Picture 1: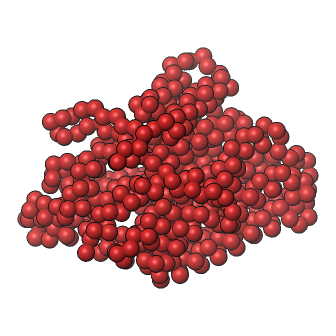
Picture 2: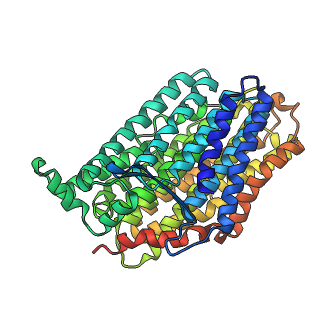
Length: 512
């Protein structure tokens, strides 16, 4: 099933490209059909997959460049399965929203499907070369989707996105090339085993003895290079400069893909690459990285509070929420308390926060898309008012997503944040204490949005609005369920990643 999962979207994109007479509506429907197949495969993989000792649900390997030690190695465990599920759901949802908004056609849909294939590769590759190829492949369709279908400022926003993300990737590539020259492999599993056995630092010291630096310093430099590549994509302050313009100028369905999926690539990379391979130097790097993570939480919330454009509010809100993920990962690597409970809470909370934020943010941008359609493209806070009396269902469901985003207990956004803060408070108390201000600021700008848009006198420009149609309600219903059910029953997601979390933390907790 795994090889079909990787190839089906790519084959769908090729079919769209090779069908010259296909109209926009037919192309959109074909793309949605193709995107539904990976969702079915992911569901079957989760239901029928076996879970041996290593937790792998599916695996596919093939020799590619054996003389260089490079193989096409892909595998799915519980954690990566959650990211695959998120990718399949958000991609299909984005295509459906695109169809309703009038976006689409052969080129647009083909680019979305190529992006989906690249994302599947990122979340399953177990060797750096195929992983990096998929990581970089996401740049091309993302750039074109922003550039060709975005707003007036799209060319500049797309170029900034491309250059900054590519620049971060160059640092990451240099770091892994250093590891390849030192130990002769880029296989994630082998590198993680060497990192756990403290073999990487001595090997680097021997290979780069001419530099005069210690192995620990060299390994720390490699870890920083890898972190920089992921910090741009996450994004971590101050590497977030590309995000607000890209989110605001991109078509709203494309913004769903950017915030729901592309930022999760970096969260996955922090968990799958940075923590397992560099446990020896992460505690030394943690104080500086924690300052960046806390700054991301606070400055993201402050920037959102200063915005009036709905898409920019949600863009900076994403910076704030993903800052919690960075904070939790750094905290898990910062201190070895001898008790893995706090570490497990931080890591499990990161996985849930990434999954839940992807769903919640996609739903919020969907409602912004509906408001744009009804208002003729307006999306400033001043363009709305009093909508609760005119379109109560739209306001009710959007309000539910907004409260999930600010962490209301009983909804999915609460669970991840609660686990993150319970873990970080035990590991790095000052970071958790300062970051609680981010929670307060999130509540302020979210409730301000609710007050200005939903309440007060009805804006005359909105007097002709109609409430959600049956099709619009059915379209968002599955994602609303994914917001409510994990909030009431978080174990439905936690059981997927619990065993993987234990395996991930073993090298960190074995350090003195």
